[in-house]
Length: 185
Image (tube, rainbow, N blue to C red; front, side):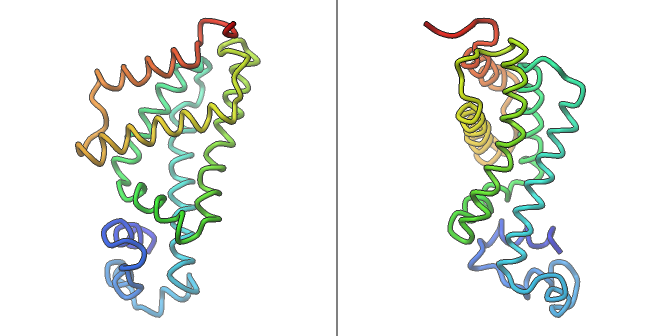
């Protein structure tokens, strides 16, 4: 049912999607919807949680065993682009969450940032990144780069960024993190 909800909210927006259309698309009776969700908003909130979990899991699996922060960024960005290529509605759904449920909107980004912050702190402690960076701020900057460039390419061009563009993005990230340097004077 969440797959059908993802399709409907992605195609029609939250306001225009109906429980009747979600259940029709899922191939279940409308009453079945209410066994799982009290209303459309509850399904929307659950969908945001599910997409968030799926994205975090995909990235976690892809970077498992990697220890170099820049390689983690490279792999994480690539995985993010692949994930949003398969879940293009994620962009619209998360943007709408800001208005449908500001709490789930904030939760989504905070939850993504939690793991990012831990990884950045570890890399800083290991001397892989500049020590004068604030991990929370940097996590949001990096998420912003990934999200906006993903939107530009995945939504605008229908595919993840091509290799030359991807390398420019990662080069920018690497220089911004100044992985080989130290604190800036």
